[in-house]
Length: 183
Image (tube, rainbow, N blue to C red; front, side, top):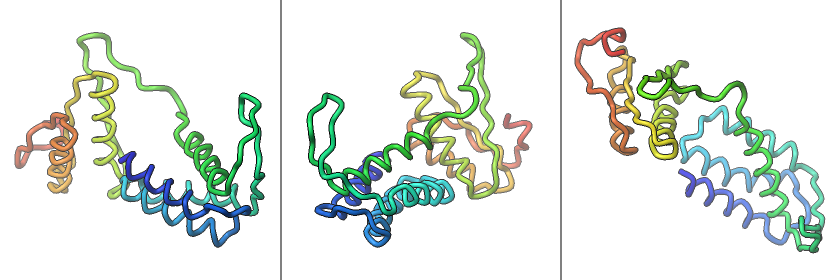
């Protein structure tokens, strides 16, 4: 996932090589690369569009200072690609900044339930797998995913496939089982 995103940002930066101004035309070309990489990484379409709109708004008309001072006071050469990358970085940080409280886990030995709710096609299943992978790998939590969407059996199978891909356990699918029974 991160490799695809990094590749898209590299290609966008390369498209802006040698330019001294960020215009609508060259920004749109660079944003196309970023859009493709975000969508390939399963970033939800609405999130992708909002991110790209914010980057475009900040980048439009930006005149690139050819030289800039680094944190250590040293003067560095800066390109339009560098400026665009900086704008993207700042917007990614802003997008990823957490709102609200962090997850609170049950005391040792207790179980913590996390319910994902949203409209069909909003990315619940993919987000569940990404969250489960992060919790199991980075936070060293034992994770079990379960799909309670009995109206769409394909959703249960999709979660099972994602569970296998991410090495996260999923509750076995039992035909005819009701959501309350699964939970």
